[in-house]
Amino acid sequence: MSAFPRPRIVVSRCLGFAACRYDGGIIHDPVVSALRPHVEFIPVCPEVESGLGVPRPPVRLVRDPELRLVQPDTGRDWTAAMQAFIAQFFSELGEVDGFILKNRSPSCALRDAKVYASAAKGPAVGQGPGLFGGAVRARFPDLPAEDEGRLTNKALREHFFTAIFALAAFREAARAGEVGELVRFHTRYKFLLMAQSQAKLKELGRLVAQAARGPAAEAFARYGALFRAAWLRPPRRPSVINALEHAFGYVSEGLRPEERRYFLDLLRDYRAGRVPSSVPREILRSWALRFGAEYLAEQAFFQPFPPELLLPLDSGKGEG
Image 1: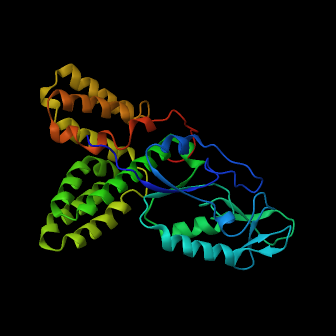
Image 2 (image 1 turned 180 degrees about the horizontal axis):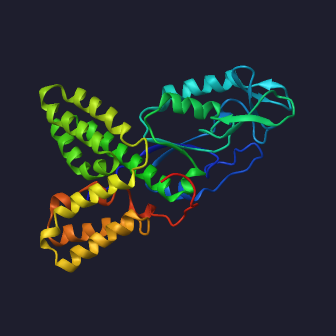
Image 3 (image 1 turned 90 degrees about the vertical axis):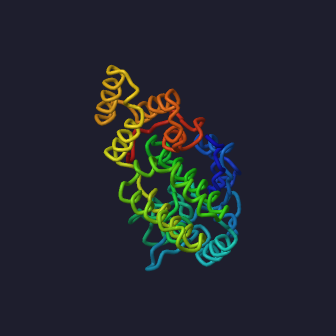
């Protein structure tokens, strides 16, 4: 299998890159640390780059009636400065494959920043994205974006890793600008797409079949939009089982009866949640190598991201 491309990931600077939190602190996040050798990080602290110092009096989101970013201790409204920074940052960003942002931050949060009724003391009246996090979700709705808290969940984290490396691989294929490269890319990602969505796999297959009839750039653009949409949700267990069963069909004839029974028992265990999908995947991969099933062995399905990123960390919370 070829070396993995390096995804370009925007990350909150406080997650191990600089002591830029409101209290002068830094957070050493294990997931971000594990990713460092494998991705190109683009660190950003929207608050500091909007003009706020370190340390600084905290800012908060206020809905009055529009969402504003205010600093209760000074009475200053930082909304315009933040929006100006966001516009400049996006204009200079270039292509990226995903985002890892600080949770609960009034600037970076993607979903869980506290929202207040006013700058005065009082309880929060709701929650939602911070100004920068909300702009990310609006500007890049089809790119993987997670906060560091949710990435402690194994299923969410491994789906995020799968998505960012798949998107980086597609960017690399698109640079070639040749229909043949699109065909090769789709072939390698067939089983991984099958595990994500049978419907998306069929749509993408039709696009590839039609690619030779028009400009390559147009084919890549149409394929890319649909390919990105395929990663918006973690895969459902039945879809993964479908991909495992299809892969099993490539090697089953060469197996002994007890090996077939063993694999089908593993599928039942996976369906019941007793083993992770990595167990039947690795067994299938070993059989593909054993029987010289090159087409199967080269599928991204078996190693969608660097194996060093198979971290034991798992909060047990979240989706997946």
